[in-house]
Image (tube, rainbow, N blue to C red; front, side, top):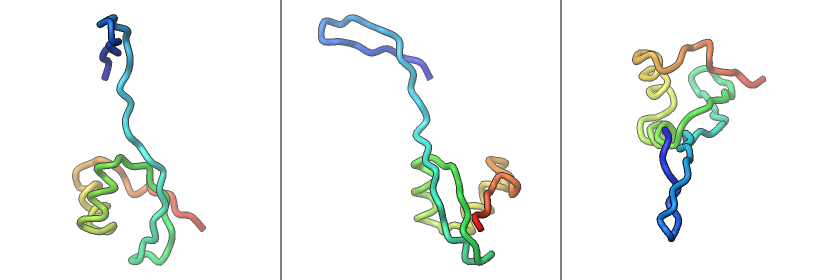
Length: 74
C-alpha cells in the first residue's frame, strides 16, 4: 500500500506501508519436529488462539499456504 508522510508543515512525501512479517520456529507436536514459518502478526495471534495444527489446516484449506511451503528444521 502506498501513502504519504506528512510533516509538521503539512509537506507530503510518498511512502510505502510494508507487511508486518516474522520468521518464527514452532514445535509441531503432531509430526514431532520443528518447523519454520513466515507469518504476519495476525497469524501469530491466531496460532496462539487456536493452536498450530488447527491454524495450519485452516490456512491450507483457504489456500493461504501449501504443505510444501512449510520448512521442516532437522
